[in-house]
Length: 501
Image 1 (cartoon, rainbow, N blue to C red):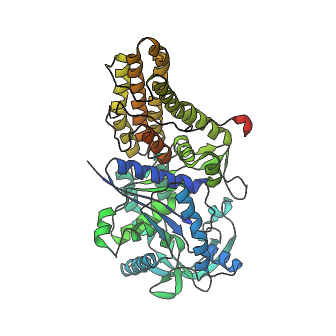
Image 2 (cartoon, helix red, strand yellow):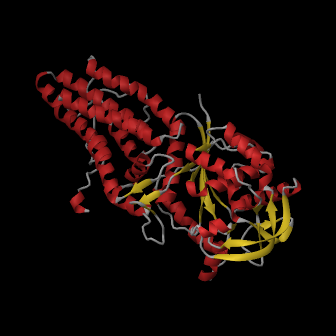
């Protein structure tokens, strides 16, 4: 049975240079989208850019450009990278687009009319870098930069009004915030008084933002603006049929550092609007460089384009999906990357293709031999192949992509062991039909694995399926066609020689 699957990434900050953190979340959303499309689900995949706020205004001023010109020049960096990474998003929203601005202003008016926005003079510590007021405790944590004391009149959203309702929702829906450690973190946060959210900035201090419709002296706080992309893009207040088709979102994929804004700010905004909450907010971990968090100040940020140019886009996609357990931090090192690449892709997957095609060329005229009469050894591989699709589907629907990949690679490893045990290169000397039976079984397992890996490695698996004459084939065991002539081809994943790095 098909399902609706609406997945989002955070909208990335336009001033940032795209790095491995951006790439990871976007590839994850893409992999999930491709899996769900293959399962027959109705998919909508949204990503985009956050283009308002003080830092954008300041960066534009330094360059002698208007903020909009600055954003227009920077936005293609993300679009170009997504193209190189093979990202299959259905929409790309920019918060400077008229369709988004209109919805934000309509929502502001609606929440104001609901009585959930009021004006108040406030004095407190303000982090210019984070573009928000912070508490004394947050200031002492050392995690916030460019702190100054501000006293000004602003507009506030009655976020605290919905605190108990949000707690109940989280408690009643165990899968709403994932992983469980983040759910517990938010419940702990909500045990303290929540307070209200300052959602405006005076134009005298910040002009670059969406104007508040009921007070033209102010623009909207950048987070109140940015979060609304999740409903502005699928048509809220603009295309009712489209919006009802997609909302609520199936999953908001985010980094753990923006958990509060999504789990508290966004949910209480939706309560005020009378809209259902997303089904799941999934906060993944950070990519570390060795043992430390990647950061521009430390100069240890991994650039996805560098990895792609060196090792190919599919190898990068596979590594990122296989290496991180969703919810936990993962460590990137060149050594880890090479080890995973050589083990999984060069030695296991790529080498299996080389072995079966080489033996078919040598002993069977380059034509896939018939399946023959299966023995217990073939039945064992076939049984694993018949259940693999359902296993992978269950894991993907549960956001366990790394485990799904491990199940696929386990079949590949089992087939490599099966090849060693059956030794079709020896069998061919005494029983060509038996050797053919082994090679058909191994090649069919390779085909099935390629189909299942296509969401992660769309380019390389397309090459494999083309070589096997199995383009468009599915997950039924035995779809490989005997009699198909195999062409010659270059190595799928050339082994990386460590001494050359």
